[in-house]
Length: 292
Image (cartoon, rainbow, N blue to C red; front, side, top):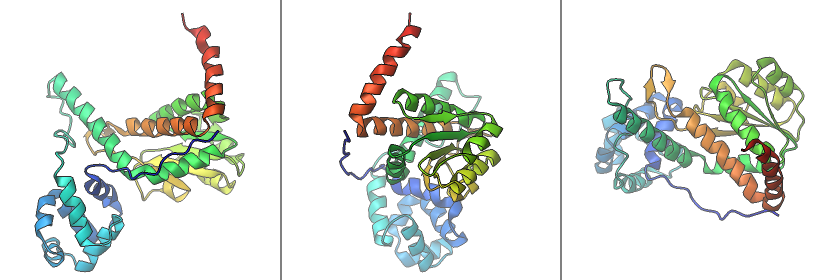
């Protein structure tokens, strides 16, 4: 039995700003000037004409319009309309604020929680269509193999356990040689699913290249649009992690990845409700032995 999801547009109250921040690394030099101005002075943008914004950013009107198109908007007027609505919503007060080890412990907790909340909301704004495509690919997969390195393997193990509980043929290995071995033996009806924040983990990129060569469907979760991983991915789901770091550690990256995988798991359960609920009931009963 297949359940149908009603079509709806998923909106984040700060979607234009979220998408601008996400697109920043992939923009041209002149488009980036417009984007930075928008992020730093969104209120001022509402007061400017197209020509005035181009002049204020040292770019051209054509660059402003190209930037609008990359946001999925028809033009500058639509940008101002969206921005006006978004600025009427109060942003999270601590979003983007760095964790400082001199903060009180309660202060650290507040920042960590707010960073994670903002990351989840921003990630949702970017990914509705891509997640639907990934879900459809998983629904028709003969086998799902997960790939991740370092702590990226954690959400892969999480998803593997969840998928197995539904009776889905899924696999995951942390050993790099085994990952490449699995990728090299995939079949056209299989799905290779990679998790890599940077999109530059050598073993993961190579595993996905091998999977694509074998004509398996390749899906990835990553932060960066322009990365070696996206080049070998049929479907890419982007995380919108806020660049708030402690040393080189990005606080919320795994939370967003796990939320995406949890959503896909529940989507699968909803789409094949009768079959998967029965499997879930059987596997739940089987592992009851481990509970005292």
